[in-house]
Image: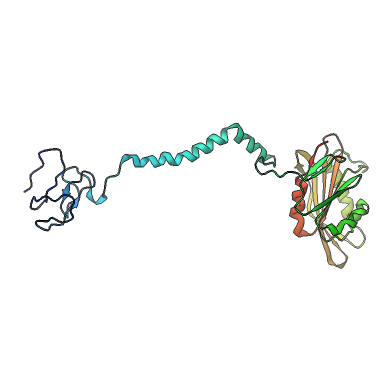
Length: 274
């Protein structure tokens, strides 16, 4: 029988015949299949589960270093970095901007500015805009330019090829309505429009009058479905925005349903400067 080692070194002899058997899979003397301990590199027999020298479970293979658990600390680095950025002044500012509908990283530079109305806005690419003394018109199709030459009420009965957006500062003269309250003014005018639509047209509510916030200003918005002669169908959107120095800015848009998203993006980009 093989005797225990006399020194603190791993056994390196064949368990059957005591022939040197280090770093081999089979004893060169008696052909006994042998295995090597993954911890102390000692030699064990084919049926040994535990190393007779260090007690390591041989079936587990090579004993891994305790440093392998450091991957947990490495995985925590992105989390710690995210918390640090989120709690920093820069992160807090980004959260505030996102909550108010602004983005410091992806903000689009306004391409529409009108000093007379005191506003800036971002129009979709390829859309055109023109201005008169009292209003600004934004068109998705330049062929709709004649639509903008009529009165403000003519927009409802127009049949443009694309979207038409009109922005102006109307004189509010609705009886019994606070002219500084966008919700009250829009609710009064929408009720009149639903009660007396233009001849030959039918109007239904898509979204009722509701208070919203556009560019930090108290606003009101409604969306109506407009059906006219010859199966003509549009979405009519009307928005009132309170101006910083008093009064209201009116936004009216007539558009096919497939261009409503672009119209809404334009309206939400409006910023009043005075």
